[in-house]
Amino acid sequence: MTILVAVSDDGMQEAVVDTGVRLGRAFEQELYVVYVTEEETASAGAREIRDEIRADLEERGVPFSVAIEHVEHANPRSGRAVGRQLAEIASDVDITHVVVGHRSKALLSRLVSGDVAFTLAETAEVPVTVVPDPLASEQ
Image (cartoon, rainbow, N blue to C red; front, side):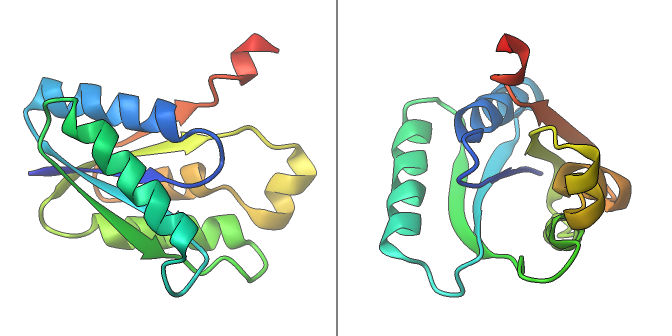
């Protein structure tokens, strides 16, 4: 069984991975960390982030694999589209849980683009842990 940990370049990568590691240890499950990107082919920057995540996880004592996943993000309501795509990835028979970050948006922004975490929580067939923005509590 595997926990899907979805990260991007939104500044929440560390908090989301930390939560995934804690859940992986608690449930004795492997982590499948996906770095989601709009790029159809992995750029040098995306590969660098993937490698940084791998290096970090090698020291954490939890089994893992790391991949780069392309998500379509260019249409209206793109947050909802990305959430549905992550739910589709999570529908793999080995995925038993999903961890994703959430950064609060203004109402207008949520209406225009949708929300990845909310859409994922609504559509995934497995439990979803939504990690709040750690910087939001400092404001």
